[in-house]
Image (cartoon, rainbow, N blue to C red):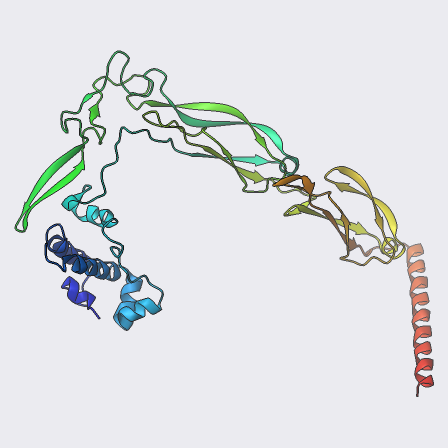
Length: 376
């Protein structure tokens, strides 16, 4: 097994700064663009693996105790940042050497004058419970970036045009040569004067200050479908920020926040409500009016219903978002309310009921004794 400390040339108690410094020095000498030895690429990958492991406190602790096999057993990726080739080297080399394309790699420059899509936007709105259940058309207001109407997005004052950047001569890049004891290295980076566009604006548009976009408030009406739930997202195409260089606008994402109902509790497409009834209603049954999403409705309570039992009103719940013609159910949870204050007449009646139940219980016990005697 390779020794990561030996690969980097540091001691086992080396600090992160020492590890970083050692990596910087070795990376310059081992990179395949500089080192033409047959095994340079493999050694460079090993160097990256060692650096990534020792710069991560958790990985380093596991490696120090159990070695490379311990990293694998602990579920850590031991391939290193360069295991798949050199496509991901930019991030780490930019942090050390600056600029894109150091040592001649980098995958090509993105054309800053190519059409670019605008940024997506997010807007949070609040709905009443019933609005979310049945849907609603709602007017919303939001700020977004629009193409400047004065310059049509060029950023230049009317009657003027952008000029070729004198620093990069329109390429959008500058090339610097670094001379080191190891040789000369060519480094290509984004032009600091035109930020890669290859153009400079000598007379900025006074309306957008040369940016090409202006912030405007916009009002639109959106249709919120029946059945949306809390934190549902609605995408409104092309209502985000304006694109650049003729690119399309981004999208607007409307995030729904539903206010809780004091009466209904929603679970998916079903709604739940609680119905309090008296012991007499529970014992004898009754017919009562209950509030539903569609208004008052008559519900039958069957005799002998128990506390916690439920009554279902089918298809009286929330419309199903993917199938709006179908709805969930309304579940009524029964709560038998025991009275805490009784009148003298009520006490008399409850005592009579108690006595009747006691007599009935004694009769049942006597009957059971007789039945047991027959089978003895």
